[in-house]
Picture 1 (tube, helix red, strand yellow):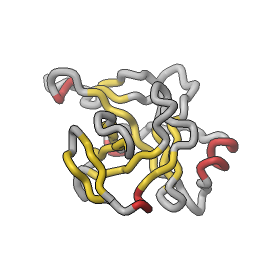
Picture 2 (tube, helix red, strand yellow):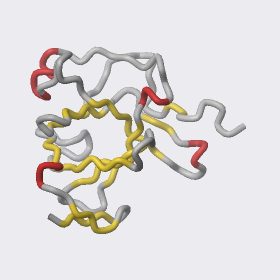
Picture 3 (cartoon, one colour):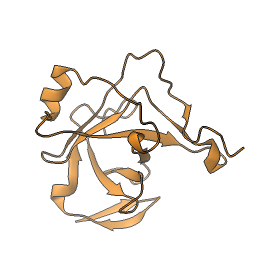
Length: 144
């Protein structure tokens, strides 16, 4: 099937690649179907493209490539909804925001995107960690 993206152009995807977000994504409650598109095989960056809205593409970052101490506990309800467990671990991503220079890129540590690559379910969860920010600089030195 063909998918249109204003950022990525026309994409050819298999229907099995569509990830169901039953709750939508905060701010986009009606968008429930997305496709996860890796930027490159070894890259910590990827995209989450809406299957229905060509203008809705999120830049995702693998948090563990940049923050080795990033951790949180996924509650039982979210784990059950996603179908993840220690035998079927989730993929975890952060939504990135680039305004201006790449070195000023920020990520949302408080609301990771959790994907189950086996059953193609996803959810963005809101953490209650007070020491995490929604605009944490990805590159700690900011290019300086």
